Image 1 (tube, rainbow, N blue to C red):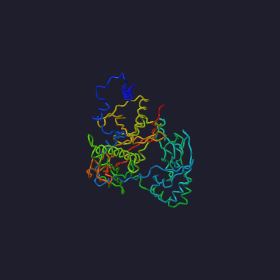
Image 2: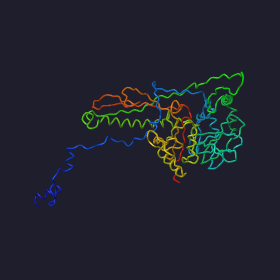
Image 3: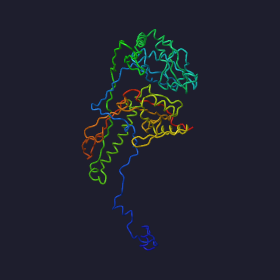
Length: 473
């Protein structure tokens, strides 16, 4: 083979190949730019919560929610500690029971906690029977219990469900000779801690502080409260002539809750050489900033849902938390959730939960009309839009929650809190501040957003908990 032929073969041009008559595309790209997109980000979600929350300006950095005085304190959830198969209630957590809310004697609380007895029930077993003496306090450590009653025509009615952390039978603490108004039946394998009245009586004989506290609580003027637990406003109606009218005033909470603005921050760093030399056709600093702001907004919505201090999942009143009747999100569960407040405006659910809702609708042969929100069609139930929110967690057991909201300050609902007009403001409630250039020629920008959320009255926010999102039967 000749030298020329060998060179042609080495360059991929055999003897019988036609010589190239135009510039190769690979070489041409060296002298041309490409048509390109702006930097893309997979982590951007719909962020419906940020869009639908009414945002209230908080110029002082703190928002105070003033409410009427309420006697209905406590009624919270109790926390337990588990060692192997043994479950014990944390003594201080007994203060979540209304009758023990303000009782602070830790020695008496510890003695009371020690008198609770662990009991196990299987599905279908009866824990308490309607009409029998209500002489035991029950704390639900694990499982689900149905409250059953009898209707006007002898049919069985379902009065509610209690689950982990709930309690019932508090009247046994007060020594009332009352009877059970419902039958409590275990819906799943259930572990409860029970305090019989006999065990309580023996403790009251040696604990003067506890006995005096319960006697004082029993004498509280609870009859002066309305069905929401608020201090009553005395009124008269239907009278004739010159009847004496009641005198009244509206009492307020002495220590109203205050919400301070929270913050999400990061420091964006851009090398000055990149900012100087590589800003065509796209501004590198601006593109970096856009993606950073998107990440901060995602974190903002996550905090509004999950923050222990002001997040919606943790700030729902325990009276506004309900359990599903059968596990998956049935239409009946959605009805109960939205009926617990006037004017439910939105439902928020994880996309997996929305898919589970759709399966139950299809199984029942229901095809509700969608609703339009901000120009987009979304699923709706009874006209209430169901908005996707991937910040609502799905547990390893494949359960999640559905949040119901009434929104607006004028509507005594849930509101977002922020402060606009910040120095170097980039978006409402978000600013970008130049921090300088270090000795390595790196430019730094402090990116901050300030926010919180407030629930003006307890029934503005409700949660359907422990929804099974993997029901494929």
